[in-house]
Length: 379
Image (tube, rainbow, N blue to C red; front, side, top):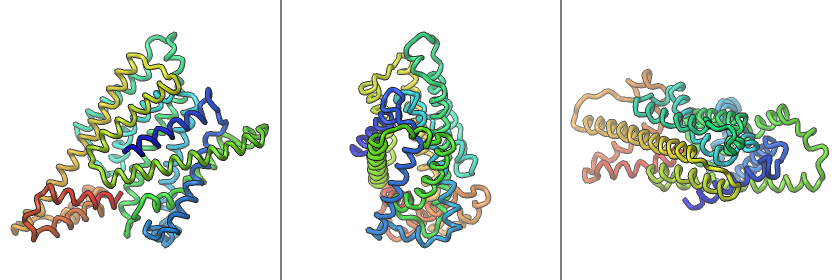
């Protein structure tokens, strides 16, 4: 948890220091992010070759068609998410950026519904409306002469919202594509190896089209170019370590810890923006911040409780089958109505429960704890 907080915060500070117009103001944020993706690509290839247990052979044995169908769409939306986020850092404060990116759950829910992965429920709709209200409160400053309004840039804010929209598509596509793979990809580093090439090439093309780096860097000194490359390596290192810390946390921490930790991390980032960059926080934005992150926490809690309720329902179906009652197989009768929602992860959970039939001393809670390992392997 400490590593996740530390490297996530350092990466946010790094991005603002390197790309902010009042800081170093590197003229090609997309190109610099492309360097980050290149470093991640190299790291994942080397790590998978040195440590076979990371599961890199699953990627190397894929056909080009299978690789392209997964890597290209997931890599493109990931590069768009990260690239537009860094472009937004040029013109908006770290505080506004963090609050705007907190809208990601709204788009995750929308994309998941569009792809048939999740069902929309009234509690989730209510929580989404709370988050949207907080975002609207953030951007509607009544007094345009106030200094806090001068630091607000609509272009940067819209770039950040676009990044949040792509982030929602990113997580939905990754879930949709990776959960259908047989055999599955074992680790985050193997996933990085599969997606990094598409992330690199797609963002490089976007940088060439939008930034035209040869014109932006033509008059720069060699020292500036070399120092920028070194900064690119530093940013890639921070991103890789943060991802590894996050994955370790997913494997070993409970869902509640992750929920609370995620919200606290964002609040901590806002605090750093105020301390390091002098971001101004008006009373109105304090209220907006509380509404947004309260809504994000409620979203995660409602989502977690609904998943737990579904899991309990499937457990009761297995118990009913043990007593001899005839029930429909959820993976045969429900496929048409739920589509991608019925996936390998849920099958693994039911198989795990069935394997516990002969040991009646295991409680439902004990079985759910063992399922966490199934969830971690799937992630």
